[in-house]
Image 1 (cartoon, one colour):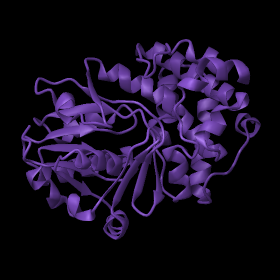
Image 2 (image 1 turned 135 degrees about the vertical axis):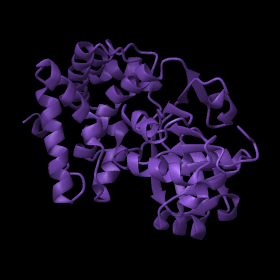
Image 3 (image 1 turned 30 degrees about the horizontal axis):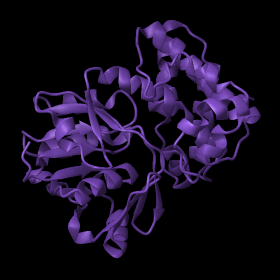
Length: 333
């Protein structure tokens, strides 16, 4: 990996702009392939990166390369793929057309199937899976704020890509079991849809036992489906996944005493799926709860809550009115 070739972010939205911005402020060459709206916002305001842990830095627009032209891949050393799962095949074709064959491609996407798509369309190239544990919100005016904590995890390779990309305020750790890490993150990401349906900030949502119990029941369905499929998810936190549903069901006071201090969540944080509904975009529900439903169908399992949530999100997508502001009781029907 050449230090003189840029890191290019393919599909720089909230996660991509934050990751790119932190790398740039650490002195790395960074290019962002982004929508014209994002480019205009950064050109007008600069790229401001902040975090719940105290990071605050504004980069001038000329400190990163901005473009909506995939020719930006032409001299990439590393390409971070941060597009929605529905756009993975399309961005892979652009990378195949424009990027050097020795560029390392790293997927920083939700879900568990994106790397397979990238490898199929980028045969022979180095494609690594990654997992982003934190949430980034985009309040506007060029600001991208990391609202929860955690380190990026990247599949280990002989080149030491994770270690080479790690910088202050953005630690990247290698793992020998990225599949387990991704399945563990999928279980946690089941809350994305619940947060989108309720419309509450994440911290407020998770402080309320009825919402935690709903998430616990979701995770229990997911764990049962994964067990039937022979999948062994790796917990993205020190808490074993098998215990997580039980801990989520604790009364509010006990939950706060045991886990509240470990929850580094900004008061304004919401899920990316909530943002998708607010902006009228298609969500990734088929790559989260939809995956659990598909596994359950293969094994004859009953996952009524997962099915119900898929249906509610698709209804909200069709309505185009943002978050429907449902209660836990309304979601359970």
